[in-house]
Image 1 (cartoon, helix red, strand yellow):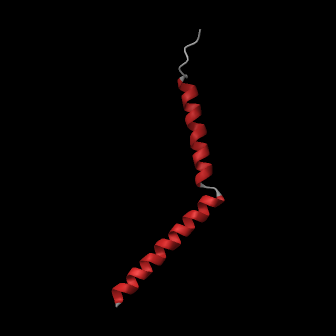
Image 2 (tube, helix red, strand yellow; image 1 turned 90 degrees about the vertical axis):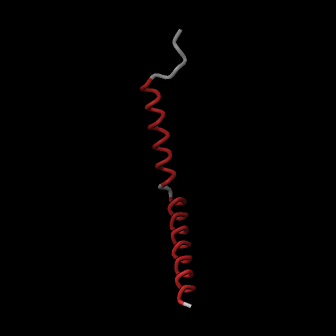
Image 3 (tube, rainbow, N blue to C red; image 1 turned 180 degrees about the horizontal axis):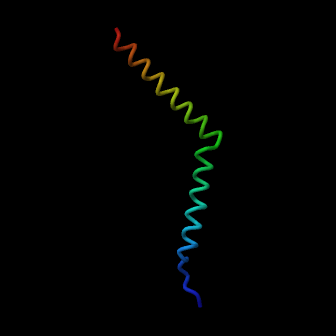
Length: 55
């Protein structure tokens, strides 16, 4: 009877599948839109702080 522990190759293959899924999720259109919105919020906040500092 085979040991139930995955082989090194099976573990590496699973890590590759997980990495590919994470990469796809991070580069999805929704993730890109969210990242753009977060950058826009950060710029807006920076502009508001700069304007407040000029007063």
